Amino acid sequence: MFSKDISGRFESEQTPFYHYDLPLLKQTLSECAEAAASYGFHVHYAMKANFNSRILQLVKDAGFGADCVSGNEVNKAIEIGFSPEKVVFAGVGKSDREITEALNHNIFCFNVESVQELEVINDLALKAGKKARVALRINPNVDAHTHHNITTGLAENKFGINQWELPACAEVLTHAKALWLEGIHFHIGSQITDLNVFKSLCVKVNEIKVWFEERGFNIRVLNVGGGLGIDYYQPDVHSIADFKGYFGIFNQFLERKHGQEVHFELGRALVAACGSLISRVLYVKKGIKKNFLVLDAGMTELMRPALYQAYHKIENISKAENEGLVRYDVVGPICESTDCFGKEVELPESERGDLVAIRTAGAYGEVMASRYNLRDEIRFLYSE
Ligand code: LLP
Picture 1 (cartoon, rainbow, N blue to C red):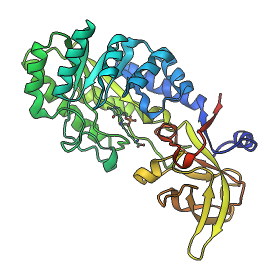
Picture 2 (spheres, helix red, strand yellow):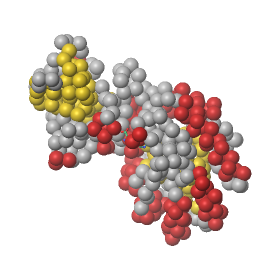
Picture 3 (cartoon, protein in one colour):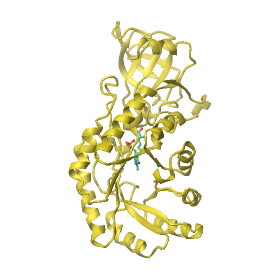
Picture 4 (spheres, rainbow, N blue to C red):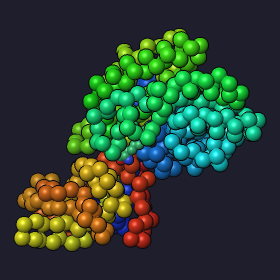
């Protein structure tokens, strides 16, 4: 629950809006940075999780790099002040314009997703008179045991280079004059809560690294992606992810030679907990079988429940926590049946005008908002 001070501040605000708890964000960032530094690991923040400028500024100040998936994300990272040496550019469909712009920024590395993309980057770098540093994103075929829509490291996914294509990559890299191989890259999925999955990833990374080394390639960077999951059920108890346990697994199971760096791309685990979507009850509809709370926020502000049946804790912050509980389907105003934040949610008896908080919405919330139904642009409020 929010403190009375904070929820009191919300009363006079126009809803809906995202509230970001910046002290919590700073604490999360410093715990992560400390845990990574204790093993000499490097973390690039996956900007796709939230590219709100205030958040990016704090991430940059905490010493993280930026993992970008579009030319606009690369440009924004540079604008915010991330050093180009700490910017990586990933994505299965980089356009020629995006590649050329990133080359001109002299970014650290392109994470390359196909043999053809290697050839295109080489051609564009030759034209620009630049050398492109690349890492091969390899599909390790490891099951992340997460929601089907956010798993990325299985052979059936569009992401990454399949292992049978590695000889073709090696061939291109041997002859491409404008490419420099920095390392290998993996990302198997998001919201991974079974840490054993990362052990399986380490085993694959070790194998693939040896394959390249046996062929004379120097693999300086092992980028193991992101994916560390968080607890959506108890936002006040486990607001900060288990960074020590997570990095510890890679420290234990990844084989590293002297000078080899380990890079991570965390998104959700850094920013999810600090954000909440604050909304107001517009109507209480009592049905024969069901009661509905109709909010002024919908799937246009937070798409995750509609898209992945994702759970977010819902709280009525205008009422005491356990007063006369009633079950509601909590829905938004959008003309879609999937516009529902939760079914049969137990909440104190609610009324028009009550404020509702949808918690743990700092990652893949604001950035996935849309203007469908010509909704207003999303608003924000920060706690400093
Ligand atoms: N690296 C790569 C290559 C990725 O594709 C992703 C996320 C990340 C890093 C960061 O993963 P994270 O640490 O945040 O799990 N919209 C979905 C999640 C999509 C994740 C896409 N890729 C959701 O709301 O759950």
